[in-house]
Image 1: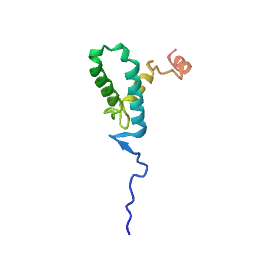
Image 2 (image 1 turned 120 degrees about the vertical axis):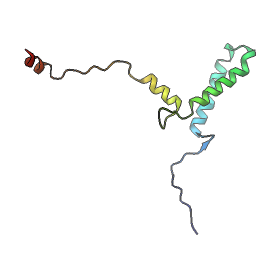
Image 3 (image 1 turned 60 degrees about the vertical axis):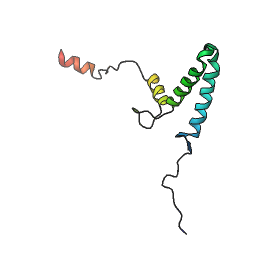
Image 4 (image 1 turned 90 degrees about the horizontal axis):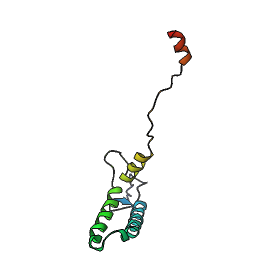
Length: 102
């Protein structure tokens, strides 16, 4: 008998291209957003609201085009966590430089 040995042993189970953990997070977060903000939406716009929120949640869990191996929500987290200060190099040899100049 011959047995097939899978080349990728650590593969995680996926449904619709999402890992199980991400799918659960997607469902819980979309249900939270839908229920919390439902009172702010007029009843006429309820269906477009549901479609827009679910579409946005799906977009957040799609792979990012600019950050390889990251999802869009991870890219947003990295964007908001980056340091906004400007880098200024410190003059390590300030005394030696002032002696050479003067």
